[in-house]
Image (cartoon, rainbow, N blue to C red):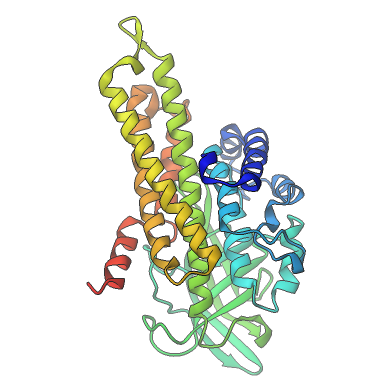
Length: 375
C-alpha cells in the first residue's frame, strides 16, 4: 500500500491504523451490538475522531479544517472498514461536508462537525434500491418551504443533528431539474424517524416529513438546481463507501490468511494446500485492482476532473465485487466455524453486504456506465 500514497498520506494512514485499531476494533462493534445500543455508534469515539483531526479532513482550512482531499478521507475510511468500526464519519465528515462546502449552512454546521459533536444523515433514497428519482415534495410557503414525503435507508437518521434532504420543487420525480437540497435540523416539527437494524447491526431509519416547515436559508445551493450539489455529495459518498469496502475486504483477507496459516489438517497448515493458495492469490489480485480503481476516483475528484463521475462508478462497483469475493472466500475457507457468531469473519460479510448496497450496487453503476456510453 505505501506505493500508492505520498509521505504525508502514509503518515495519516499509520496514525489512523493505530488509532482505529486500538480504539474501535471489531470487539467494539460486537459490544455495541450485544448491548443493543440505540445510538449505533459511540459518541465518545466520535469526539476522539475530532481530536485526531479526522472530522476536518475535507473541511477547508478557511473554515478551520485540514483542507485535504478524498484520498486522505479514504485512508481513514479504509481503517474504519478494516475494523468494522461503527462511525458517522462517512455520512458526516465526507458526504455532508461535501454538500455544505459552498453553502452558508457551513457556518452553522462545520464547528460541530470539527468538534465531533454534530452528526449528519442523508435523506436521499425513497425506494428499496438506490436511484435518482426524487419525489418528496417541497412546496413554497411564505418565505420558505414545506416538505412532505418519506425517505428510506437514512443511516444515523434517528439521531442525526442535521438531515440533508433531497426534495422536488418542480417537475416529475425522474427529472434531473427541479431538485433542491435542504438542511433540516433534527428538532424540525413534523419529522419522525423509525430506525431499523440492518444486517450488519447498524441502524438506518425511515424518515417521514409531515409538512415540515423550513425557511429559505435552509436551501443548499440553488432552488431547482440542487442536482449539481447532490451529484457531488453522491460522488463523495460512493468513493468513500468504496474505500470502506476495501477496508472490509482487506480485514477479511488478513483474517483468512492468518487462519490458513494456523489451521492444521493432516498435520500441516491448510495454507500449504495449493488450491487454497490459488484462491488467496486470486483474491489478493482482485483487491489490488479494486484499490487502484478507488485511488483513481479519489484523485480525479480531488482534481475536479470531468471524468471523475465515471471513475467513481467504476470504483464503487469494483470495490463492491472485490469485497463480496473477500468475505465469501473468508467464510468458506474458515469452514464451519466461519458460519458461527463466535467468530468475527461473518461480521465482515454482513458489513460488506450493506456497503455494497449503499449509494448503488455494482449493477447500478454498471448500468450508469453503460448509459453514459450511449447504451
